[in-house]
Image (tube, rainbow, N blue to C red; front, side):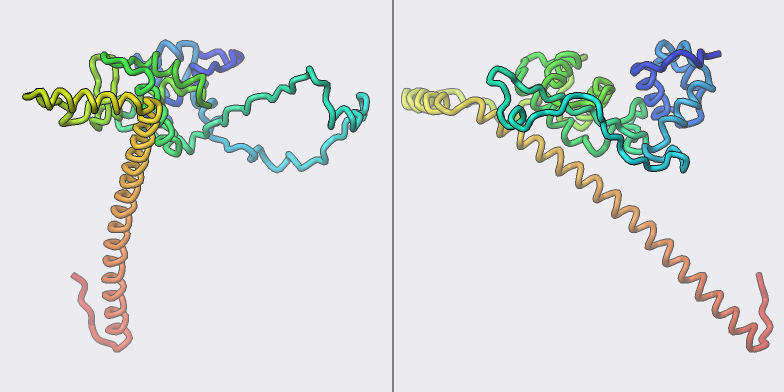
Length: 286
């Protein structure tokens, strides 16, 4: 039996969500027996998983009708702040602005990936892919970069959810399966564009032109080239995601059209039967 008094950790929550994405809600025994999640959920039982999933599935702000709106309490204690202190702060005082809290991703916003191994926030997929291309372009390792290197590059530069490492692994595998990234064992890198081989120089004039071209290219800022490549990659990924959404919508529309057509045929047959019955005509049912 699980320990009901033991507080859930972030790792356990991630394992629970990943297990639901792989096996589906209600398959608590399968999740606990799965070697991928058994170590993280070793102290949890079926009831623990069921209760935790029910708590995660409750949307914020729907705790019940008993929580009535209450007027905000006004703090009466503490010295009043002078207007001069607000408009003219001390010269050596640097105001500290707390970082914005990470938005909690609701279970309704999470969907299983193509392998069913984890859950991905579909709304932020283009942003995550852009972070990945930015990290790989900046690391620029010829042998590729592993998940840890990419994660440690992105985490201090962007706001990411607590389970981003698992999302990152899923997105890297997905991009590699789509041939948008090249995977070498456990390392990923941006594939080299086709047709980048340089022709062999034939004459002295060719050597001179190549030197001039190299000198001109060195004057261009490398940072501008990298930013342009990252922007283009983000645009391509975003466009492909929109195409996928449009295809799904078209398929759904086609299904609804066929259903409406079949419904119309049934309605026409029903009207004919009603007219025959109203006219007193005998009707045979096969």
